[in-house]
Length: 158
Ligand SMILES: Cc1cc2nc3c(=O)[nH]c(=O)nc-3n(C[C@H](O)[C@H](O)[C@H](O)COP(=O)(O)O)c2cc1C
Image (cartoon, rainbow, N blue to C red):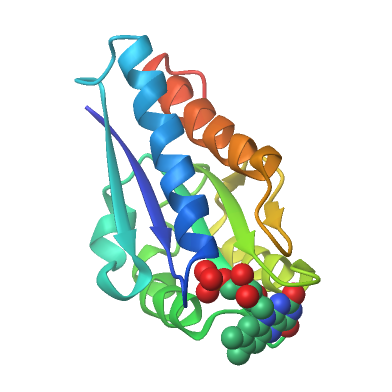
């Protein structure tokens, strides 16, 4: 069985809603393809996730708010804890990012991408950035992201 791991932090609502949409998209895609026994979807808050989760995952989707022009402190804590235990052991695995932000989001995106570059994961989707009020379009993009990852893992196309 393949594993899709979704790790996110939220200080309030927005990034949580985006994470829910990613998970929903993944689960719906697996249901439609009758592939629920082929891919498991694990969702963890950044504070609860660690290197063992990342090492066991075939694909990783990260989610963070943008705080002070950077990823949230809890996402940085997560990446600090997983970086060295995972370095050299997860190369080439697909990953993607979603960001809940107020006005910008690029600081959070750039800071996560810079660190993940060192893990040599393979970015298979541009970061989704939800600005201001979450729109149905952004929610749909998040659902599509989850579906793409889940279906891709199920058919071995990621
Ligand atoms: C301490 C703090 C710092 C923030 N800094 C930024 C920022 O630098 N750029 C930005 O676009 N939004 C910033 N915001 C707005 C948040 O990114 C935005 O409210 C986001 O939706 C929070 O996601 P959440 O509800 O999942 O916590 C900040 C919010 C807080 C609380």
